[in-house]
Length: 77
Image (tube, rainbow, N blue to C red):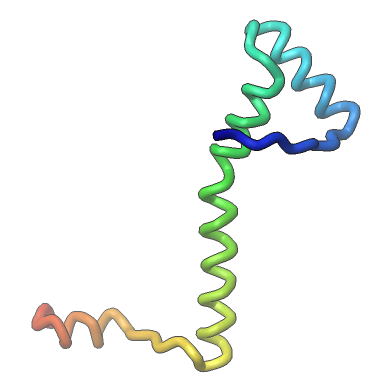
């Protein structure tokens, strides 16, 4: 199942999108979908990282040094 969403684009972005679409024979919708799918994982990762950083700074998230981890796993020299 797919859902429809309306997107407002600046004139310059829309013109570039239409030009690309015209040159390649693919639809503007194709490129919009590709751009969203390509960058959604990155945006989700950034959001998650920002949440973890906030928890670390507030003392709610425990952190470990590399030395501690190596020692705990028996990998220390």
